[in-house]
Image: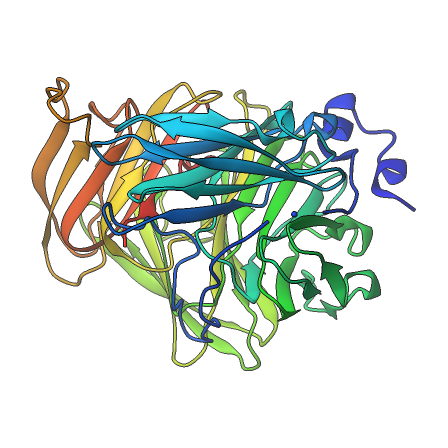
Length: 480
């Protein structure tokens, strides 16, 4: 039975998000090294430093207008010169088509791939003649909106810590092959009960060169409140993203996440805050062949909580719900780091749902954590359907105090810096997040910004509108 048949009784907005589910054709790119079991050899998304050369990005998630989750590609320039390039739309059905783009110095250019090549689902390949640029993708649906970084590399593996097929929730897993040779992929699911599924329909799936295939996980694992997934390319190299719709609890929402290309031993969430009536849950997925002993460390602007220990079974998942932990107070921002004992690698995501009966859209979201710190991060401006920045959180991962400065991305040569174009420098201590909320000062959220630190940090920028903090995160992309 198809997904649309099973969900025929759902309200029109939900059907619009998940109706046009099908397979198809798409792209090119540089392959990352094979992923390590204990850490990322290369992040899924990383800005090539300005002046180094050209750059390519791969945006696998999102749909065409028929499915209601139309994708917008955002190209963010951190340099002082315009960057030129090509955006190629790769649909799940139909022909790929390209468009030339110019990104202004220190600015943002947006492209809707479905307007180039309409299809039930549409991915994008972005090739630029310069570096210092990040590429992200967003979706806006009747259920809400979400944004995620596109991938700057392909990989032979992609991991997703959680998703929901409970009730009328649905997951669409998009697999893009941007190469010039076919790829063959297998998809493995881990259910909330711990069962490991290898759906026959998702084994040995051929993804032709420059083509897109979409898999509907709810067709093979119904009624599951938390399903983890692994996409493995047994030949070739691909990019995978997950589009999630939430309706089962009445707190509607949408999540868009590019997967993790490798399991890692450390995952951080720079800014988490549970408000009264909301739900915050961390999902820890162990895709490896041995159990992972995991420590969850928590820090506040002043002080810390005792760590939480858990064991995650091999090929299994565990969840930590904030409201069940007395050491995680309501209404107080905190940062979280998950650390797995060597050599096991894990993947961690955070799920947030707004108060039952509350207002605001979206009211449910899911984001992947940060697997590694960086000394420099590029963050986008808030663009529609976002309206304003809500909070900026920065956490020190260096183990010693670091000095941080937030500046507006470079404008054209000779242009004066805008008023309020910098914050800092300021000091961030280990284990004590620096939080600017609510309404962080200019230039945060008003223009692309660069966060520069004297040691590795992790960064989170939360926008409005949201029903609860953390439901939507504007992607911070490390500058390599």
